[in-house]
Amino acid sequence: ELRGLFGEDYARMAKMSIIEEGDRKSVRMAHLALVACHTVNGVAAIHSELIKETIFKDFYAIMPQKFQNKTNGVTQRRWLAFCNPELSKLITETLGTEAWIKQLDLLSGLREHADDPEFQARWKAIKKANKAKLAETILDLTGVKVSEDALFDIQVKRIHEYKRQLLNILSVITRYDEIKKASPEERKNMVPRVVVIGGKAAPGYDLAKRIIKLVNAVGDKVNNDPEVGDLLKLIFLPDYNVSLAERIIPASELSQHISTAGTEASGTSNMKFAMNGCLILGTMDGANVEIAEEIGEENMFIFGARTHEINALRAARQTSSVDPRFHAALKMLRDGEFGWADFFEPIIKAVEGTTPGSDFYLLGPDYASYLEAQQRVTDTYVQTDKWTKMSILSVAGSGKFSSSRIEDFISSAAMLPARKGSMNLTKLMK
Image (cartoon, rainbow, N blue to C red; front, side):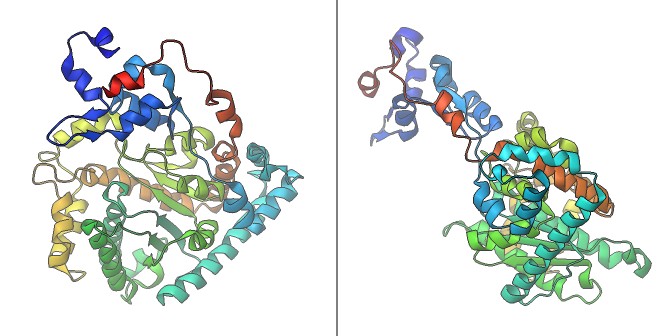
């Protein structure tokens, strides 16, 4: 069948073959699954487009009807109704029904209450109480006492270079440096922040484990500096799991989803945080794109390069200029400001952009945009009514991200008879 489509283009047919030829033949499981299956689902709109344009481009050219999008979802029963009971009660009381627990799109009814001062006051009180509970958990797990009046800034997910926990840590170093250089009067105008990072690294992922060590090393320095006090804390929460997430997410005010554009398939923690009234600081990657469509980009803090810009930025990385604060943060690491200088050297080399392939995930080119977004966070946080309205609108726009959207699958992915002239699997394997 492929010969009928491509003629003598054996290179293309070899690239699409289910069997990879060589000294030892192997089965390309993705190709086998793609040919044998009824439907190929991407898990976010941007992900669905990328698989059609890149890794499965040749397959999409001959069987486009197989490719669909099914954006991921989360269960509101656990990630709102169960883990945030006081907010759930307020939502039920305001909407006049518990039906939203099954029909999450009913949350849109909260929009008409977003400017109501009394509703906002109750909303803020619930967030404050949840922050107090998380502060107790942080003290129990780490021994660090944090201010409940600080902005709770959270990044909890698997530790990986593409998820860019390192971008977050470097910005903490920059913030620490700014606090140290500020006068006592300037410090009075700074917004206190508690930065929480949690997650696990794969056992053999050396650089990810070094990043975890870096979080703890920077935290040890920052958290014990009397000049800094409550203006900045950096916490690594150990053994991150679902039970801990159920305490973190309701208390979060800002959540970071900052992967390099085009690298995150979807993400689901962004949905959980938005569903609990936490504002998102993120790139236009994965499900962030659709969250922005639902809750409004004006209710998020978006930054960074877009997917179509990534290849050019990588090609120019060695010669491009980046924000000097990026290099200053790396220099503080290299100079041993946080100890363990030799241990952190592989991290520095991975991102400083001086050798081919370095800074593959573009921390340097995104740094200025990231810090600008962080400043927008600070400027907005002191406008408490505006922040609270954005929080309410975040929850109100979360209806699409329920895992209960079963009608999506019934309507377009139900098993149907094989189409006439469907590709013969046996012939392809030969």
